[in-house]
Image 1 (tube, rainbow, N blue to C red):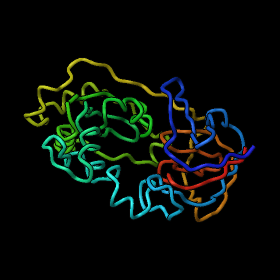
Image 2: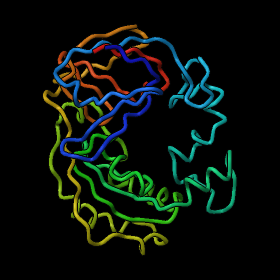
Image 3: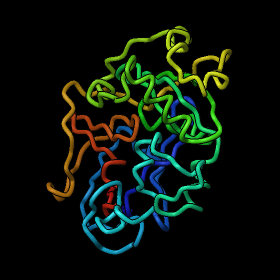
Length: 263
């Protein structure tokens, strides 16, 4: 059977293990059912996730024109401390920015390759942790807008990482940490205007991924360059396919590619 569609971030369900779905326009694939099966992926073309045109993908699934125009790719997406909707100040589209920025946000600690601090909308918990391949996570603060979450993240980055080492995450080189202890350790570094939003009492969330075999030396697949690839799928973690020959493929990083997947 062959499925054809535009790659977008896999949708997930928080179960044990995590359930993954590749969703195309007219069909979907329950990825967990592909484990220990041989699949073939073929690059067909590109389709911008914003304008829908057959244009080369620049970043985040968008063509270059859309990347610098759509509110979905504003600087505040990656740097929440730049959010300005709480001031009524527009970046690209004030209505969209109000909708996204002026809702509850969580600052959290996640452990995937190391302890890291991050920001996400409350509605994206635990999806954000799943996408990062974190095996454990905990909320630190819950604030009413993205800006307050952003300045908290900036303040805490001096004391804990804000990036994931994707190779260590995929190799499962992990150590369990006491995230409640880490949260208390970082409490004094939270900005004054955010201290009242500190979460005192909650437990760690633990996540379990459908992986039968971790890669010893993960090598990233560039499907656009290779054209086609076949391999035995042995795991899914974060937004990565993991294959038996140590090849890994980042679905999120390849959003906007049109592919054929043969099973």
